[in-house]
Length: 96
Image (tube, rainbow, N blue to C red; front, top):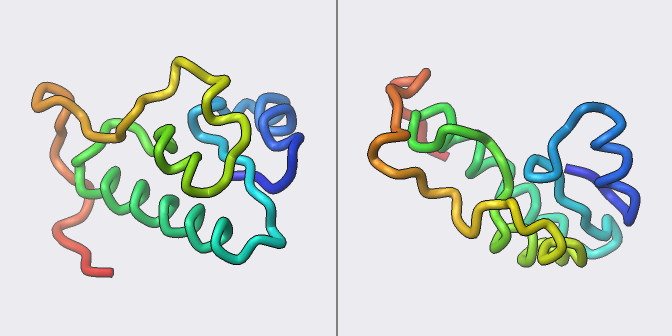
């Protein structure tokens, strides 16, 4: 997650994949809520074993107002894994 237009450049310099990066305007309250909700959802689903990676999908990036979401074609359109990719969760259950 990163704020501002250089989020992808800075993330890459730190070894963070573009799929794990989202750029949003911190002055936009709705964008901020959206990206933090997406981060919480991704972490929860990964911890429960429902996802194989904790990355942002294109839909989540668009909801956060990420202007660069459509430029990164290697990103998943959705974060739902196939049944083959599912693994046992690292937590029993979590209610948010």
